[in-house]
Length: 118
Figure 1 (cartoon, rainbow, N blue to C red):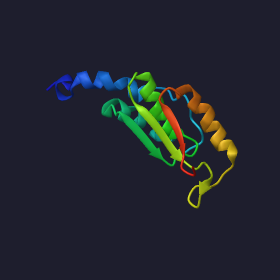
Figure 2: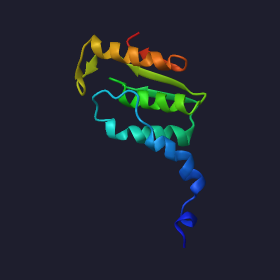
Figure 3: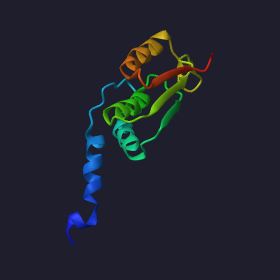
């Protein structure tokens, strides 16, 4: 049996771009290695809405946003956080929120930052 008969090449070609996209925004994060998966997940699922609870510096969130933009999807994205930290992530200052706000400007047409303190 040929390799081309084993896999569906239509899907391999369609999703190859998602796997090999170069991340636009990569803050220091344990999520770095998962960014290609985020691109692939958005490409495959084609969601109408993405909601991330606990965005911190935005490594995963902006990966989702980048895929939405590059694949020209009609998807709304929401990042929900206090941008103050917590007992698990530790406390951090205003600089984290400012960097997220700056990164979000590129996705401002469909990306919304929700401060759950409000």
